[in-house]
Amino acid sequence: MHVIKTVLGQNCRYIWHAEKDVGNLDVIILPGGFSYGDYLRTGAIARFSPVMQEVIRFADNGGLVIGICNGFQILCEAGLLPGALVRNRSVQFRCEHVFLKTLNYNTPFTCKIPKHKPLRIPIAHGEGCYYADQQTIENLKMNGQILWQYVDCSGQLTEAANPNGSLENIAGICNKSKNVVGLMPHPERASEEILGSTDGRYIFESIIAWIGSRQPAAV
Amino acid sequence: MKAKIVIIPKKAVVDPQGKTVQRALEHMGFKGIKAVHVGKYLEIDIDGDEQNVRTQIDDACKKLLSNPVIEDYWFELK
Image 1 (cartoon, rainbow over the protein chains, first blue to last red):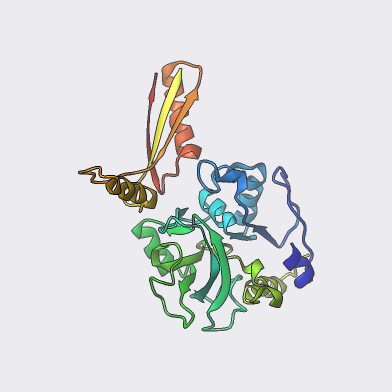
Image 2: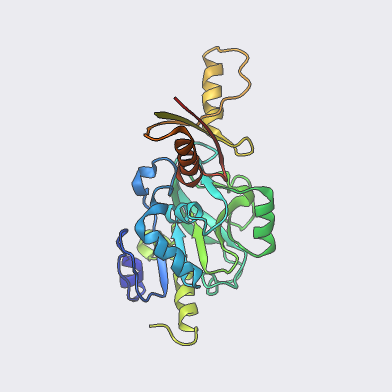
């Protein structure tokens, strides 16, 4: 909220989990936050919040949806994104800055990211290990749905740069129609100089630019 | 009636919890352990005829209690 409103100067509002009609929006952001105590599985119970029916309807109509951390887990549980996020392979909660390589610049979430620039963005999760069966992974690759991979500071894809054991170093993916995205790193925590990195802003600025270029102009 | 439900990670999914417990058991001196898998156990008290309860519990396992991407489940009614 702070980043979207104060840092980026956009209109935004909180959506209550019990809302059944979200009205006219350009984008819905599902933030992180251990909803329902992560009981049962991460995102499993939140996925059945009343508002999720509306989020699914919004996404099915082409609306932009971005899930960050727990939001990513919720989108997977809801079936809006393929695969699942399981316990980090190290069994440790990892809270640190990581580097991300962007694989597809042709989406509403990546169009303003400078080419070939590894993004320095923090993670903070215990269950961020992306898993999907082999066929799903192949489909993700084939359709350009893997948007970000964990890399080292020089942009190399290494096992050491993978903080949670995700298959293919996957940090973030999108759906086939490229309007729903989920990522474990927190771009909102890398949007101001005082926090050590502003690389996260590229993702929000991509969304803003993409919405601005849409015809007819959004409200 | 009571439904006793067991949910375990699929074999293809890495189970770091199971691996960690296995290592601890081995450090303690337990011999011959081949694998440990950590899952969940749920008990649900529920009324209704057996067939109906079976259908409902199966549905609940598919929709909420387990995630078919990463977990298998089985249950018994007592």
